Length: 233
Ligand code: ATP
Image 1: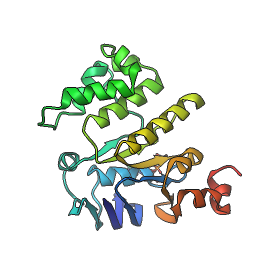
Image 2 (image 1 turned 90 degrees about the vertical axis):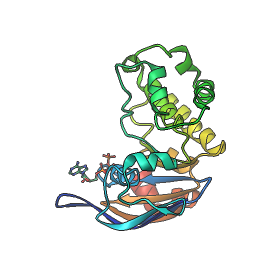
Image 3 (image 1 turned 60 degrees about the vertical axis):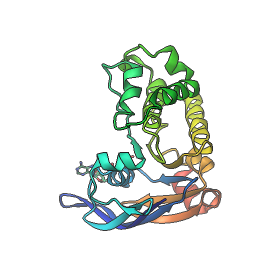
Image 4 (image 1 turned 45 degrees about the vertical axis):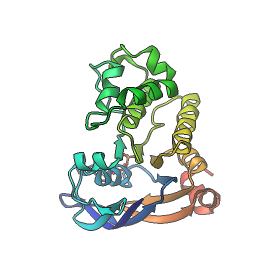
């Protein structure tokens, strides 16, 4: 579904992604783990068209998308749920969700809204509430719900568990699994390597802009290198 081939991304003179290659197959959850500043968010921003790779190629559903506008990439079904949730604080929950569908021209937006409410009953209870007054966990659910309203084929999630209480972290990870099981492919960026490896089929480890390890998620979780560096062993 997604094929990233040897991309290099810079912020001015800073070489943030150094020859990254990876793939995501339809139906998978692929996790990308790595320390602060490794380049995880930069990679997601490049996939969704917010940053341009200087060299290298990105293929999504068989089409090259490197350098395409973010809006065109959204229309293809590659949807980015950004770090820090970024909900529109002064708008209601429902308005935020409707904005997720703003590029759609089909007639099933209301049906999808009902599905999001079914998945997140707390959002339905609060549909008229200003998004800025929601708790951190509720805002994360809203951000995911808004991304679902765009009908993602591939959903990019940037640190969905950040800043959440342990119980909510569990809930968010099981929601991600459910979303995947109902047919959405997921590329998940996480600092919570433990959980991210538990729910993933495969994973990549990013260090200072380079992929240093990759493979089956269970095997990676058992490797001494990953245990020492990322699982607090
Ligand atoms: P975190 O989990 O802390 O967000 P990350 O793995 O997502 O980390 P990135 O945010 O992608 O890391 O950052 C990768 C590198 O690029 C870092 O060295 C960072 O300082 C640098 N960087 C990120 N954004 C910019 C920017 N707008 N301008 C210059 N450098 C940047």
